[in-house]
Image 1 (cartoon, one colour):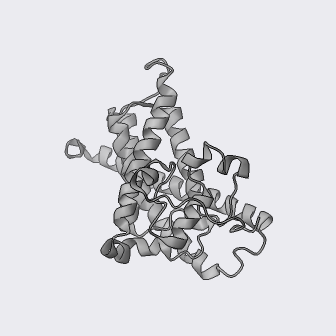
Image 2: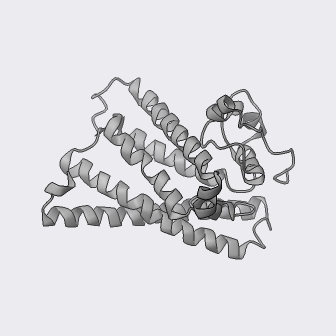
Length: 250
């Protein structure tokens, strides 16, 4: 597909990649910054001694923004100008029941990819080369959501751009997928549980990942690998449950 592009098309595709990189970077700053401000209000002093760590998290995350933004921008351009993807805007193009189903399909596919690549990242060599960057956040903060080595960022950046070529999705549902991805990525790393205990400890909560679950991954490393759901952790025997009561100062 890319080989057939003329010079104006190449410039447009590059411009789209650059614009998407800026959008991803701004989204990161606003979302992580917003939850960091919430942390200052709800858990004052939690990040007070973590200045150098937060600086590193921001630098790695802005680099990751480019790695996420470039393929997303090219795919966005291809969708608008060449009809490359299966993103659709006419809500009547597929049955209405496909809207929630497609949301689940995207989230489960993303979660599956994340679980297995994340487990691979914990093998000694990949961990030493790449994933150690993310685990250098001790404890993680709201700024750590995208603090990845470029190799790890690349494994995460290809998922949604690949799915839009394979699975039909309405543009609004795709926006919801990206919103959930952003919120969960940040809130799982804040160092405190933003969701109510009634949800976290409910039957539904037993299948969802929140900060109480992911915090234990950052403490023990060899458990709780999932992104949204605890399904693969439970199937594969890597679910270690939730962090101990009071871990977040409640």
